[in-house]
Image (cartoon, rainbow, N blue to C red; front, side, top):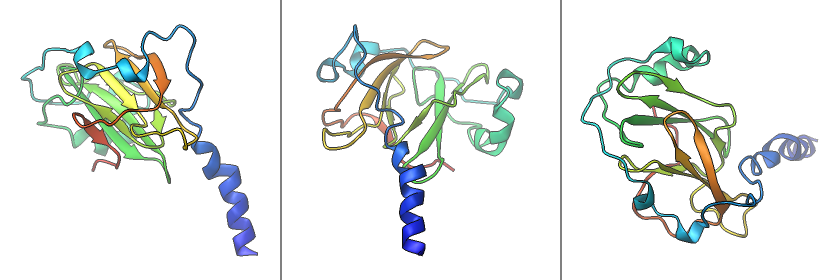
Length: 173
């Protein structure tokens, strides 16, 4: 009986998470995964250390107060002057937020979740969701460019071998 309930739970809740970031490649995508490189989206890295979160900048930020306060004193790890913070939201699920090191502004979106984590660099505005996705998985990698306010989809597909990024595949403290 317990095994049957566990199977029903998996089919109802866990299995659909695999499709969170698996929309088909959008027509008119600017890039294919094989052609995207962090060096295509280079930015200058800020020397500022993060001081304080502006909890008024996003209504959901206060719910993650302890996670955001953990960032104090850190330097940018994404897109020049931003900190990318991530945490687990269940089995095979990670959510993330972006915080401006200079202003403390928080950027969050309920749709910012992945199954296999994210890949990013301090000197690039490129963010890859679900790095390492393969054709045998029911999830694609998403390629996004951060413009200072939102993530803009560049394309989707299978990620080639990535060796030069900060791979976030587990929850930060």
